[in-house]
Length: 177
Image (cartoon, rainbow, N blue to C red; front, side, top):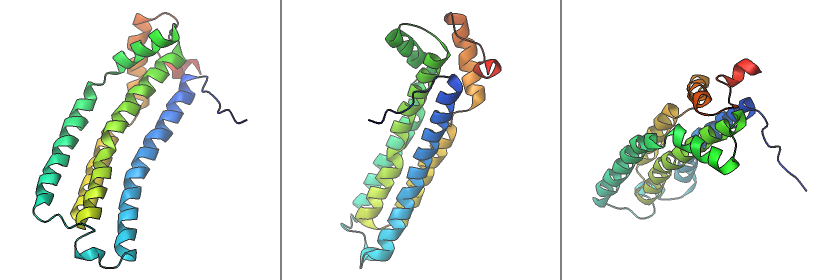
């Protein structure tokens, strides 16, 4: 039976988080690739997608833009501190790995709210056949994902803050390595 290796250091969790983040960016790019493949392989697709929404497309676009704005800015409210506190409560202890897992969880939640922007753009493209939807919403998602990328500086700041609140947490997990 295969058992994935559980990260045992904050650095391993950070690397896994970076890979996860890049996977979300790659998925957003993949929607563009699949959309272009549909355009090339499906006869009569250029004539308006599979449904052809007509003027209602603008209402759908406005809804997705509102979602993108709300969740891109709203997901910043998912604080690292609240996720760290939740992980500490769940684990019953505080150490570097638990703090890293809290930071990772906060990022996963942000990614989960951001990627649907690209998915909805892909759906609009499939329904209406307008490349604007495919590329615009993928670009919005990728830009938002850029702002949510995990950086060592962000994590160092979170560790410095956590080291003041919890015993057993180093102020810089990279310094200990």
